[in-house]
Image (cartoon, rainbow over all chains, first blue to last red; front, top):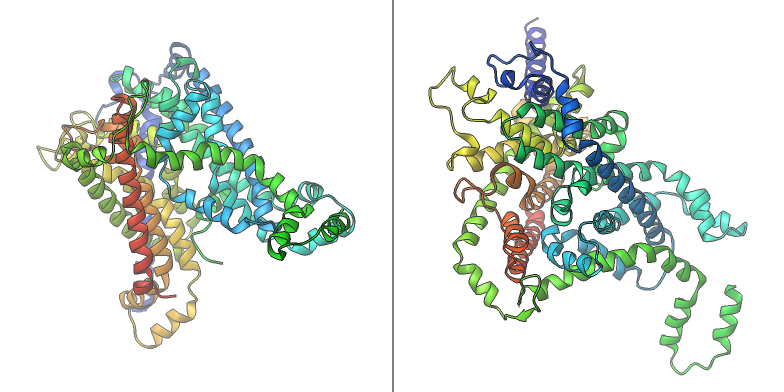
Length: 277
Length: 313
């Protein structure tokens, strides 16, 4: 009886702690959504009005019309989709070669790719800028697309996925006279769909959230991506917290949608490599 | 195809066997296909990542304002760094921020993982809620926390005023600003590392716990003697990735404090950005970036050396 009671107590307290922590984690987001629907004078009212007394969805239309937010959206979508496609194509091709083909210099080349992991972005930031400037691509979306389309991480991840697929499949297809590209495109790639989804979501999310590279390369207002747009909104409309919160909500929606629908891939992309086996 | 190449190489005279074999291997159709597969990525990788990586080391010895021709500057950038109080303060802030955040993140993430690993109804919900901050952009959460931490009107201080008349000034106080950034960082990152610990916890066989229980070990003894040693490989991975990623934190500082108040939240990567793209001292900033790189390298090296001592597989 006593043991049962203490077990019940332990379980209840676990619940209470888990619930409190979840509330702490989610609190800023709920506050953000709530503030984004309020008139300016109610944003900081205390006790907090979780459900706005005066409901003001016009904040969103104001954001949509006075600031080129739709344009920021389009720019973010364009850059994120382009980089994602770029990485899916180039990294799956290279990862395939590293995983399933033999060629001289393979290990040395792979070590160079791995070493690139170690270099913090800020170390190559300045020489990268010199390269992009000499190509005449500063203040264009091409700068962001080209810089982020060829990651060592993507090659490494795709190699891991391709290594897990049985070699016998390729051998059988080779005997049937398939070209290597045919084997890659028609047999192995369809089997690596979870890997492609994992990489795709990881890349999309990191480009969508990227701030430092756009800050360096994009100056024209019409080319800004969402994080840049949100940062300049934050700088220009400092006291209009309701507008800033509406902007933050808008910038989060696509990522939250991706997370909710594709959580499995989202999580596997972030945890690959952490646990052996 | 392969028969043809074989024939072609076989008819050639062979002065030295070794280079010939290498040459022959180079010509196999498989190798050629492999190079074609790698090429699209390799060109981009070389131009935008590998070559810039090498250039960074050269730039550290140069003087360059971004427009006029570069000049050789020897090690003067580096000697200047060590006399520069900006650099010293940035470095010490970065170290404090990184190590304090990481220590808190590791402890919080491990406890969270143990909490949601048990037989808990609604586990999926708790995990998603705890992980949620990680998927959002630093820019978005920075503007939200800025409002929440507003010292006079923000909900955080309004709440604290029920306990004290003088709640902290958070980002506006040079005593609290760095701590505020640490708090936000722990809030954002803990959920991600919790997932890594969860994966590790699921790999621990329940037999170990049963054996410990039979030996009379209580909850805390089980944690110390089973969970902690069995988790040590994951902990090791978490600490390295956490430190390396936090060394590079830029967005929070840029949006929330700009390095201030005073120089209280000035950090290395922010200083590198400001020195180069704001002040046009690209050579000097490159030297600073190289120092950052060496620190990251040193930490990784020390941790890998230490791994043998405290990781139990």
